[in-house]
Amino acid sequence: NAGVTQTPKFRILKIGQSMTLQCTQDMNHNYMYWYRQDPGMGLKLIYYSVGAGITDKGEVPNGYNVSRSTTEDFPLRLELAAPSQTSVYFCASSYSGTGGRWGNQPQHFGDGTRLSIL
Amino acid sequence: QKEVEQNSGPLSVPEGAIASLNCTYSDRVSQSFFWYRQYSGKSPELIMSIYSNGDKEDGRFTAQLNKASQYVSLLIRDSQPSDSATYLCAVKWDSNYQLIWGAGTKLIIKP
Image (cartoon, rainbow over all chains, first blue to last red):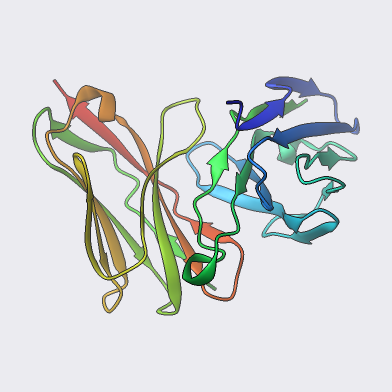
């Protein structure tokens, strides 16, 4: 039972390089999220998606892009890496819920990607 | 702006005692509340969710919600060293798909 899988686990980038952080889930969840977590801080939402083909900005979207072509995959793209993007990145997914619990389901997290920009 | 506040700690509790973690939030129109545990270098994992006023118990964990006072708490009974972690509070507001996260409280259980 894989759950949410993120790759790579660690990466060092040079300033100005680009990369894609991969995220896939096998729980058939509609909702998917990308967060970043800086040391000693809580989670900040970068982008989220409520289904294939639908994405929206979170709290800190600048410098990032996402796509959602399938239910399973939600990659995060960094176009021009900057030192301020050094962080731990978490992907999460959740079931949409039904009735009174629609949209209120807990999120399940991947193991994270530790990214350093030098 | 919607905010979730937690005491950063560390909160030090003797083994076997009750650990009490608190979380306050800024907006009365809130719907769902979650407690996650995060070990150092690991991802958050869900401990409890609570949607209605009152207490919800699950094993050694009890979540308490008071919407009128805008706080949610987590009690851990018979604390164990393995409970040492950072505990994150997350709140979902009605008209939003997003969770707003507190910065977390670091809990240390001393043997």
